[in-house]
Image (cartoon, rainbow, N blue to C red; front, side, top):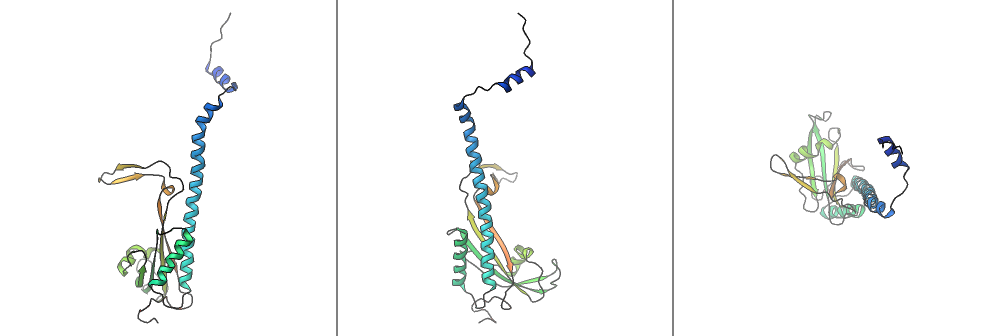
Length: 215
């Protein structure tokens, strides 16, 4: 009897033609991968849903403030925070900061313009912004304004927790000794902070109660 040597090509051909299998073994191998895939897809879609919802909620309250013709106060701002929390389903993990700014000099240049804070108020214990703080943090988000034009800057923040947390939370030491976490980016616990700038619609500016020049 003559024996034919088992070549690699023959072995691969035989492997491809072999249709025998064990369903239980295949299930054990593929089920965790399928579950991970389904949960990841659900989480990614939920992240983008929550991110879009937070931005739209900011636009909604910015539009509300831009239409206001009466002076606002701390109670009004607390109500705005409740509206934002309701729209984002954020519970108690939200805050809102409203800062009104005006351009006073060199308004046609992003680098040289002089911006001033008219008033700044926030909810949930967040600090208000001074003129210096505004210039260092949010001025780059404010578009060019004509000289003397007021603008309302609304900052919002909402905490987000995905429906399924992937099991990846690894810490390693940076060269400076601080800890850095390796995680799944947006598909982890996160805080969405948005900044929207609007102009007052029915008056020169938004007024804070007790402010000079306001009723």
